[in-house]
Amino acid sequence: MSLIHKPHDKFFKETLSDLQTAQDFLQNYLPRELLEFMDLETIALQKDSFIEKELEETFSDLLFQTKINHKDGYLYLLFEHKSYPSPKIALQLLKYMLNIWEQKTTDQPTAKLPVIIPLVVYHGKARWNSPVKLSGLIEDYDQLPLAVASCLPDFSYLLYNISHYSNADIKGSVKLQIFLKLLRDILEQDYTVFLKTLEESIMAFNQLENQGNGLEYFETFIRYIMNARNDLEFQTVYELAKEISLERSKVVMTIAEKLITEGMEKGMEKGMEKGMEKGKLEVAENLLRLGMGIDMIIKATGLSEEEIRKIMN
Image (cartoon, rainbow, N blue to C red):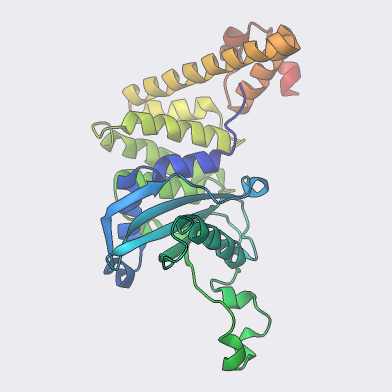
């Protein structure tokens, strides 16, 4: 079984592509003075992405259309999911905004450019030291004469540095709070701090049980934590869930079985290409990364305990 490719990207997009959760985030975190001019009831997700291929491991993005000052405008969310900030994020945003304007005005060359409000979400532990204005990247901008500065483009972006949020800073629905707390602590080096957040998140899911896709989102949640942290074992998640709710622990085991099944299927596909034995070894290696116990891996792959321990070493 191959691990989820770009787990931060997948978690970010699966959560905020839910319009209700996106509205919840914007309603709670956009400045009041901006919200006065927006109608978030009209929000609609655009299917476009503006991230270059070579930067997909670093950034994710979502583009929403909504009414801003009674006209069609856009909110552009750029999520940086590496552990340290990009120094020229404002320049990156300018490029993406230009691409959005170009795309949205292609059919109407004479049309006015729509409003785009850029937002940056960051959850790395390194201090954010990138300028929040494009002018902060221009050499000696604050010393330029007005006649020169007025010839240069400038804008600010809204920064959400989630790694600095306290529990009191995290607002909104249960689902949004689970999302933000997990993003904040998924890169936490103190394992006990992460486990505390994990425990609180699993408890919070009890409130989502009767809310539409609560069970589906729990699976998204489990897949994310197992792929984003190399030091987390599936058995640990199971034991935490069992302490909170026997029913919840059963769901965790169901997800584990699904992951094993997926791993076996992928292993069989690869096995046909590379040899069945090699396919089994790849399955076992990935199950070990997910923290599966040796007994479960033996059942899933048919390998011996000795073969599995060789992979561990």
